[in-house]
Length: 111
Image 1 (cartoon, rainbow, N blue to C red):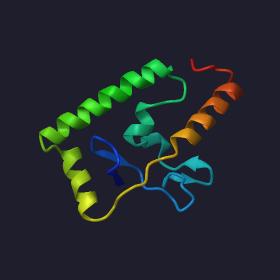
Image 2 (image 1 turned 90 degrees about the vertical axis):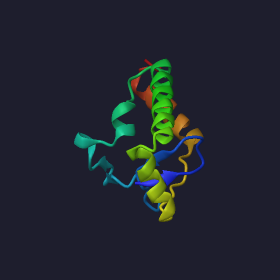
Image 3 (image 1 turned 60 degrees about the vertical axis):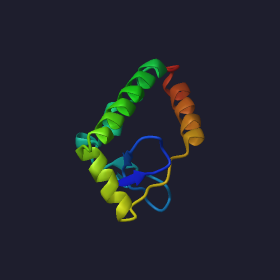
Image 4 (image 1 turned 135 degrees about the vertical axis):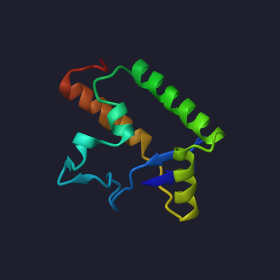
């Protein structure tokens, strides 16, 4: 895990490989798919944009609440920060392009 410090709320993400891919992406497959990390399990390719935004808002509020209560998520984030285990943010523009391409290929159109 890595802590993102560029977000307005504490954020944990999987570590990345040198090429920027998720730490768990091995030979083009997710090595932990069956037991996927929260972010991967909570957001999936077939949800609408509105559902994705609703879920994102819920996670932001939960992380704010956890930080205010000095909860476990916040303490893990602090531990990673103290130990220099800081992640780099993902390429949102690149992800959006890949997402749009995937939707066109699958014919889902954001459904």
